Every structure is written in C-alpha cells, then in structure tokens.
Amino acid sequence: MPSSLWGFSPNDKENAQSPQAPRALIILNRGIFLVFLFAWTPFVFSQDLILQSYQRDFTRADLSAKAGILQDAADDEQAAEFIGPLYEFALRFVLTNAEILKDDPEMIRLAGIAARGAGSAGSKESLDTLWDVFSSYRDSRTRVEILGALEVLGKGNGRVIENLNQYLDSQNKLFRSGTIPDYLTLSACVAALAQLGDDSSFPALFAAFTAGYPENITDEIAGALNSIPGNYLRFLLDIILKNPPAEKFAAFKAGGAGRRFSPAEQGQLAEAALEQALSYFPGSAGEITILSEMRYASVLTLTRLRWTRASARAIRHFYRVQTDFQQGNASRERFLEAINCLGAMGTSEAALALGLQLGLFNAQTERTGAYDEDVVLALARSLGSIGDKSAFDYLLYISYLPYPDQIQAAAKEALNRLRW
Image (cartoon, rainbow, N blue to C red; front, side):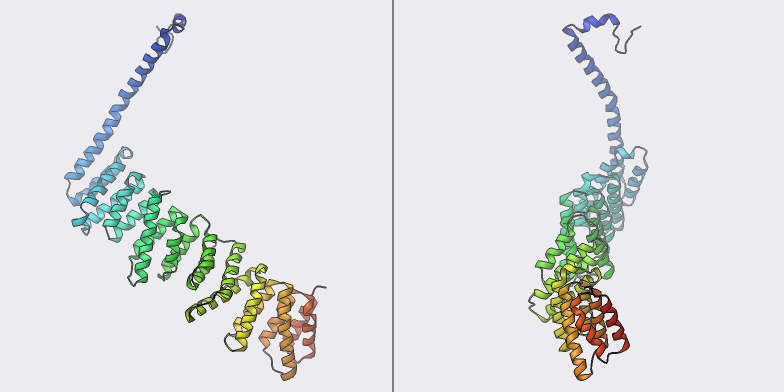
C-alpha cells in the first residue's frame, strides 16, 4: 500500500532528485488541473443550461406571464448563479419593445421588476441598459425603480452620476420655464444622488434647491446637499462670493439648512454673506431687496454665534441701519438687531460705536425729553455685555436724565460690568 498521498514510497526519495523529477511533477500538476477542470465544467455548464432554460421560458411566455418567469427564477435555489444575466435579458426585451409597448401596463410592471431585481442582484453589467430604459420610458413607476437600482449599482461610476446630474439639470430648466416635472421621479433622482454621494452633484442639486420646487422637495434637496461628502462649505462660499444676489442668499440659507456645519463654519458663511451684502453694488430694486434680506439674516446668525471676527462688518451694518432708521427706511426691530449684534461682537470698536450712539440719544433726551425706550435700553445692555470702560461716561450720564427705572437699572448693571 503506498505510504504517501501521491503513491510514492520512501525509496522514491532518491529518484525524486533525478533530472526526471521536475518532468514528473509537471505531469502530476497538469493531471491535478485537468481533474479540477473536468470537475468544474459540469457545474458551469449546468448553470448555463438553467439560465438558457429561463431565457427560453421568458421568450415563449406571453407578456403578462413574463414577470412571473422572473419571480420564479428569483425563488430558484441556484438563482445567485444566473439571476443577474436573466434580469439583463429581461431589460433588453423591455428596451427593444419600448417603441410600441412603453405605455402597456404589463410592460411597465415587467420593467419595474427587472430593474428592481438587477439592483438587488448587484448586476453592474446592466447599468447601461438601465439608463437606456430610463431614457425610453416616461412613466414614474419604471423610472423610480431604475433610479433605485442606479443608486445601488452606480456608486463610484462617473458616467452614471453625470447622467443623473444632467437629468436633474434638465428638470430644473424645464421647471423654470413653466413645465411641472414628474415629482416622484425628481424625488427619486435626488435620493439617488444623495446615496451616490459624489461632490460633482453639488451644482445640479443647488440649482434645484433654488428653483422654487414645493417645500417637501426642497427639503429633500437640502438633505441631499448636506449628506454628500466633499467640501460643501467651499462650494457655498464660492457662490456667495461670485454669484448673483439671489444665488448668494440661497447659498447662505442652504448652509443653515441641516446640521452639517460647525458653529465656526456657520460663522464663515454669515461673515461672507454680510460682506457681500455690504459691498455688492446691485443693479435693480429686486437685488437691493435680496441683499438687504441677506444682510439682516446674516447679522442674526453672527449675533447667535458671537462671531467676533465679523466685528468690523457688523459696525458697518450698524451705521447703515442707523441711517435707514433715522430716515424711516428701516424698522426699530432692525435697528435693535444691529445694536444686539455689536453687543455680541464684544470688541472695543463695537463699544465705541454704541457709546457714541448712546451719547447722541442722551443729548436728545436732555434737549427735548423725547427718547425711544427700547433703543436706549438695548444700547445700555449691549454696552454692559461688552464691558469696555470707554462706555463709562455715556452710561453714567443716564442717571442724570429722566429715563424710566428700567433704563436706569440697566445702566447701573452695565456700569458694574465695565472692566478697568
């Protein structure tokens, strides 16, 4: 009985050292490979036969029965070995007959099952066919199923992502021209781009965000923008710095939608928005309105964040609102917001601007007895918040004037908070 697996006896060791040994080993290895090949071939052949059997049944079946063939195949114990090519076979059938049957309910049902199946099976070889079917069929059901498959299969595929970007762009343009889009497909496209997560989709999604779609769609778009990896902050900053006023404001608002950005990043966006609102020269009344709204909105964000880096810009905003308020072009609320913003900046320069304003109101009160209680109170509180000693004289003088108890108390508290 041989003492080794290969049939060599211990006495064969010396023979293995002979020049004939390598040739014997090569022959042996070839034999092993041939045994493996012949053992594997029936399995592969068997899988081909199963696929061909399902393809034959699919071809012979009526249109109404073809979907059942796919469902039976999906339930087959060996489905994993052939189901992808079978779905591709079905998608080819759907595409070939699109011209005459794309509106047929049974064909639409078949297209949806094949598309969904291709996605579930991970059949990346069907990507091109899926897109061709998407382009040929206009019904929501088919398109939504295809988009669901593409978001699974198209990860990292530049061509798929570009196709979806271009489709979304085309829908944005149609909507702006007055054409109502298929919102189900539009929503599925946005979801697919979010899942694919490529930063090349930022421009198309941002254009959709500013297009004026219904609120639920716009919220989905904002979610997609916030979920895609990449330098979204840089993208929004570039729009704020370079694009027309309406897009600047939209970029600022997009940055505030969701929780993607840290307080520091939100501060950068608000600071950039305020700078643009102050320095941009508008060409129309509409642009003036947009820039004013962006200015006021950015100031609220800077106040909330106490973003001291924007102090110089906040002071410029304060003086502009001060002038507008005196001329009746800005409300008291806007002026109070500007005062509160300087208080949040906490700088000596902000304290100086507020102190000078309080000095003017003190002089007016002394001369006429007239004052705006809300504004004087906000000035005293903001100066106390900053705590700069340059405000001492202005705050102390309040005690000599006929201001109400609330203002007197605020001035005393502010005086106690000054740093010396």
